[in-house]
Image 1 (cartoon, helix red, strand yellow):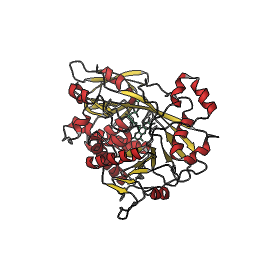
Image 2 (spheres, helix red, strand yellow; image 1 turned 90 degrees about the vertical axis):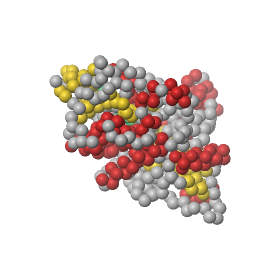
Image 3 (cartoon, helix red, strand yellow; image 1 turned 180 degrees about the vertical axis):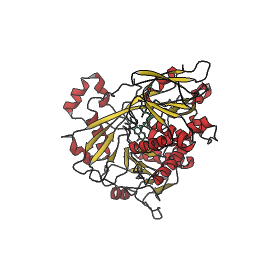
Image 4 (cartoon, protein in one colour; image 1 turned 45 degrees about the horizontal axis):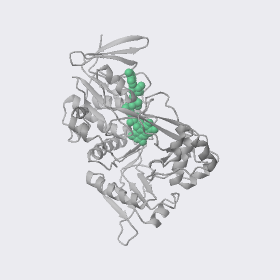
Length: 458
Ligand SMILES: Cc1cc2nc3c(=O)[nH]c(=O)nc-3n(C[C@H](O)[C@H](O)[C@H](O)COP(=O)(O)OP(=O)(O)OC[C@H]3O[C@@H](n4cnc5c(N)ncnc54)[C@H](O)[C@@H]3O)c2cc1C
């Protein structure tokens, strides 16, 4: 029988970063990483690849976790000559509503208190602080915190492509994007060099009778292999619940469908050095009378005639020479079954384009003739309170690294660190409890999170 110190199920960013932590950082030997697919090909390569330390609440745990994760990402970027092209262009939240501008200010004051960095307000008065635009590449030496710009002249001068109705933008600065694929491959290569064995196969069963993990059955190359191991990590992304059920556990997660659209901005509407752009206002799509009539005849389409949620967003994609942009609008957030390939709602590309064109009206030029869209995506598998599960499960030797929702690329460096510290008995940071899976066994906690809104749709 094969033997391993630990078997990790899933070679997305969760499983790979766990393997990297255990083998490279903690020197653990006989780490086996199992996936029925090639690494990084289910959800982790469908991401928008953005990162932020900007979490308006309801407490400081996510800011502290993502600050730590970004520290680790920056260390990896430094050590690899920025192989995964980390930039720090920031997230730009924009609004046409004075009330939302006030909410942005209140959120930024909270985020500052949580450790996201200082808030600088630009209201067009003498004595305003300087606003420093973000350069397109690199991450070093940039401001953190956020700039709240209420000065219309400064908004129009700096972001002339934004809707003229924009009354405020909040530019969160310790944010940007990177190549998720390269980040995963960098860690996977180092993990392999440190001895991690990557097995292409499907975890079919976990033996945990007697309350402790003892072996894992893997179907690979037409046979079922049993690997004796005292430890098992569930890092199965959208299949968390299914793999958890092999341990007899009902994991507290569900999935939302999230898709993204890539089109060529051949008219050059969006400057290639633009930050990640988010429209903070709910909106009604400006359908024509004929479109309105046609949509009202189909029950599933009628919600498109109502007010749609805030959060249409976009970023430019690709290196020099690319003209592609990514468009997203998560307006369908009900829990769904995880089906592959994920179903694409009718007219998704056009609806995203319309939503983002409210923020960047120049994109409306594509509504008459939509450039050929490429649509992909997957699932945000998440907990009720939208916080990850990183640590031990209530079976000895069983751990989980998952429920990474819409932040797996940005947070996994720090959540993998938590899993590895739990497993090796290291000293945990004091934010670890907020992500410890056992919190869901506490009825008080479950009651507390019932109406919890973490203020993020992305
Ligand atoms: C449209 C979209 C945009 C996103 N944007 C961002 C973003 O901007 N920034 C960010 O940080 N995050 C973003 N995310 C979220 C991020 O992509 C996920 O949080 C992350 O990829 C989850 O990684 P994972 O390893 O948990 O899951 P996955 O990448 O899905 O990996 C799970 C792996 O487990 C394997 N597996 C499952 N069951 C078994 C089994 N029984 N045996 C063997 N293998 C098994 C699967 O084959 C799969 O390869 C986005 C996600 C989507 C869908």
